[in-house]
View 1: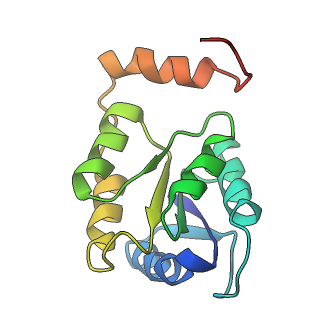
View 2 (view 1 turned 135 degrees about the vertical axis):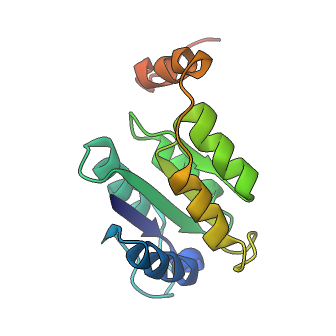
Length: 150
């Protein structure tokens, strides 16, 4: 599978580590940056990565930042993206099982480095359960992102 990567400076080291993991697992990687630890703005790298997933150029995406919050928000601005901020293996499994997550967001400052490979492996290997979750994911995908009253 081709996996899109995007990060800011605060997620750069984890991105590079995950890139090595993905390549060792036989995946192709499309790295949208950043390419060093110099301060930068995550939307410049995360949004193009998410767009590549939404267009079907990449099967999934992984984005990285200090907390991963902004990166998940940025990715979810793209129609068809279901990005989940995951900090445990269980959160990663549930993102795939229940939400058919296609972008994983990781926070380098919040997730211990030794846990990241297990989170990534679980997220990549866990299938979407479908069933009752299909209806909910369908509603997410049908929503075009336009503001509305609740």
